[in-house]
Length: 235
Image (cartoon, rainbow, N blue to C red; front, side, top):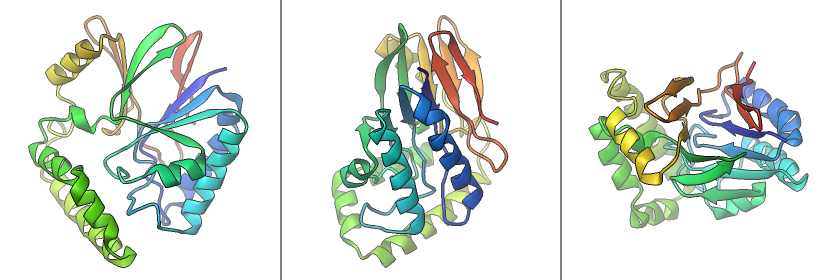
């Protein structure tokens, strides 16, 4: 059976179309697979496992149905939902993976990650990332009331949108040299990541980089990998 990779759905209460696409995937292709890997930014933002909403409950229930059927579900944190913890993962039946993870894909060794760590030319973002990934900051944030966390998250999201308007496409993409060095470090011929929202297959010097795209109302970027190779199967 195939293995599927997805990323950058950015689910939110305001995008029921994306939720419908995700549920369609979980109730269809995902149930006929060996495993599903979600490479970050499943949600548009995440303020803690103690948050409850119809969206969150629906997603958790749908993922639990897939994992309960015997399909292995894995999650790599994104830049929007890096605070997803073990409590929510257990509710979904998902296994949390580190920011870089290697796996065997039908005889091919592959490296997977969200992709934001490869965008080292975006200096301001990398500085921000280092701060918010400090464990003491995360613990402090999660101690705040939910309403405070929601306000902070929305403010950060607004600043991020404004900041992106002044950044070039090159700065927000992966750094080629750093990415190649990372691939050599892990000794793999294949890298799969998301984050940049630029669905593509890049044939590099001796290795391949597959980029997952973001999800839109009329298209779900879904990478299928089986014994015959890989292909994007989103509609």
